[in-house]
Image (cartoon, rainbow, N blue to C red; front, side, top):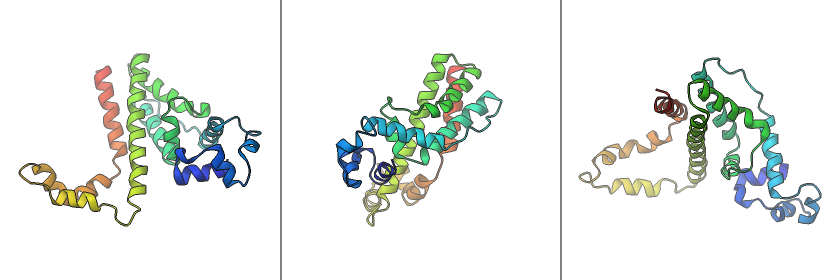
Length: 201
């Protein structure tokens, strides 16, 4: 599991295979199958291991606050291991021990006045926002570790025609700073309040 975590952390889910893992362990794929049935079972064990590291905090009694807090916890736990977002994106593999977060998001939404169906819709919107933010952050981090990072963007912005792109031209010099800011929480609250207005208000 430690070897699998190293591969996942360094290279992502696509690089993990039983053959690759066996090679890193100086073993054979068949030897690994004595311990796990397949890659999916290994990933489930890793998901459960990660989820078990996080205790369940007390959540606020007010339903909107509970919804925001649970959604923020979802983000914070996944931010610790970006590869988990790739695994969960399949919508099949999940850590049962982490489902208390989803339960509290759904419960908070229902207590805010949503129907169960609307609560599931709200959860999916929150999940898409969270997964998208984390995947883009991870991709950006890898890209901007390269020495030539940002060169294409700078050239593209420098060549913008102000008559055709007046807003972007005006923002060009500030674009890297503005887009690098961590605005997840304020965006999350805006998403949740928008969902509540759409389905309850």
